[in-house]
Image (tube, rainbow, N blue to C red):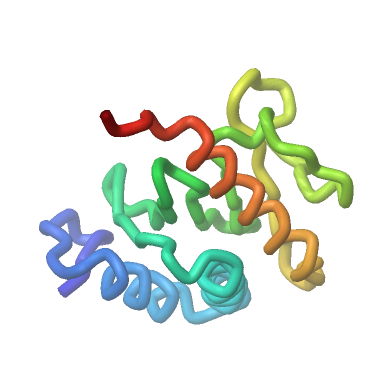
Length: 136
């Protein structure tokens, strides 16, 4: 059960909560979030979905890869370590001033460069894995 607008507790597995958010949006934002989610899973079949910070979808693999926030006019995909990633296709178009994060803002009608986005996701996973402490 997801009742975020009424302020009651959100209950369920993260994947169910993300499903509910997509359904709740019911417009281009839900479609975009669903497409981004699908591309993340294609790029990294081992990705783990989380639900953090009172309703933000988060995708992790050896650390946070990215989040999927939804606003009135934008779906924002924020990469936790985006400033450390190569972005040859120029996907990052938001949160460019920080030293750590970078984001991609998707607006209604935007076409997603799927190949470039999957490459960026794979690069984020590789970065997380390279920083993972070695076990003794």
